[in-house]
Image 1 (cartoon, helix red, strand yellow):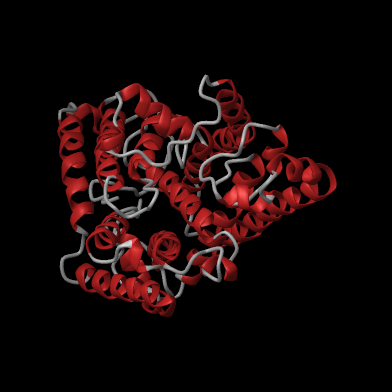
Image 2 (cartoon, one colour):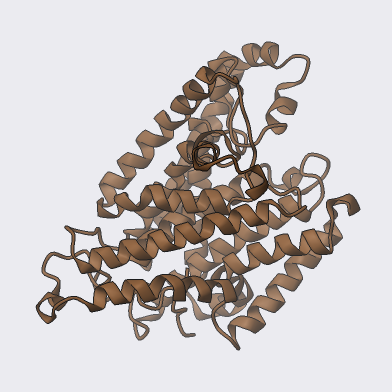
Length: 423
């Protein structure tokens, strides 16, 4: 099976384990997309829906999506840390920035559709705009950055929202209809929205740290599963203990007349600012240190499992429909929102039948498209719009610069070529 031209980070003719590494990332991304399907068109998560079977599908799916954004960011820029400033580092940064700038208006447009979905794409674009300076950091620095941000970001969010003149403000996911100027948009995307950058950037930084590693190495893949499981236990298990032993009574009193669970489930993106004890919960979309650590653990272990599953050729064949969905994640995400708006209004209800239909259609259409036309339409458009300026900048380099003694370009990682990247 030929490696997809997107996030492979190596030349096409390399061993099967390298190719498996790439499709393993695609499978993980597909699971994130299908998890969002479960939240958007499946049964009510809190009334017998998917979240009853796998607690917190919606929160984990979007966190996995953001985590894989960090992996993509590193692979798209050449995997090795950038060094210095030259035409090759400029080319890498230009590719990232153009994609980020394009994703924000796409996300705003999708948020204006009548879907009831809290669209993540505009936030996703801001993550790229804010995270690109970290392309110069190595794995250790990225791990430390992710860990520190996971602890301090939620505290900063709590304090900033608590000190706001309007109190505990929540804007959801903004669209063009909510436009009140760039400053207001930045505040929503970074602090008060459903996926605020102030608490979601740790997912991106953690993904970037992972992207620096040899993802085709069996020991690395196994380590992902082990470390990820440990982080999940630390985050969710730690919160469970703290809430039951220390903060549970305070939360119950503060939540009245509702239950703690009802109050948390009525919010997306942040916790109330009425009591710091809310920072000890770990439910999906709460943006607390416990939730961030736990969700990173789930994402890391799931990535390890998908990489392991794709090592053998039989695994890649069996999972090929999922690989196709992951390779066209932006197109699939956009198309399913348009479908909800045009043909499957929320008033018709969320059912298992609808969820199964969305999943089956996505698998079949993406598999057919990928094996005939290869790149998804939105992936191809992003590639053209971002790669051409980057190639122009890189192509103006003098011949003496082609060896790139300072590093930092697409071939700074051994055997890597990124011109065909399509994410």
